[in-house]
Length: 96
Image 1 (tube, rainbow, N blue to C red):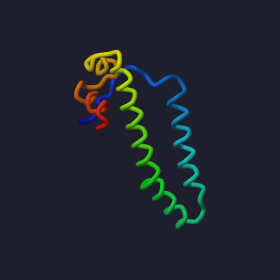
Image 2: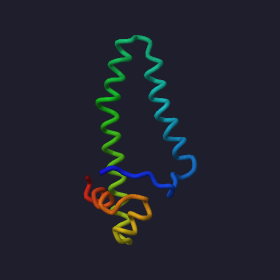
Image 3: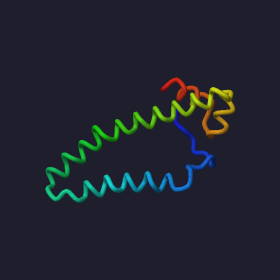
Image 4: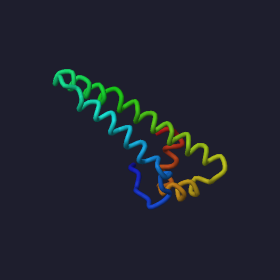
């Protein structure tokens, strides 16, 4: 099941830009590696090791946030607040 874009809530001001700047810095780091072999090996490490770990951490953060919201809200309320389906919220709460 995929997430559906929702008009709100919005990412807190400045947070999206800060995260984008960090990602851009990592990509600029790749671009700055002069040796093509080193650049490819480093890009592969980013794609194979660092990005999957970041995705796992993002998933964990989402799940923890949903669990925290569920302490005081019903599943449907959390879904409406986040702009997600009830089944998706339930999946996130279960770590899926």
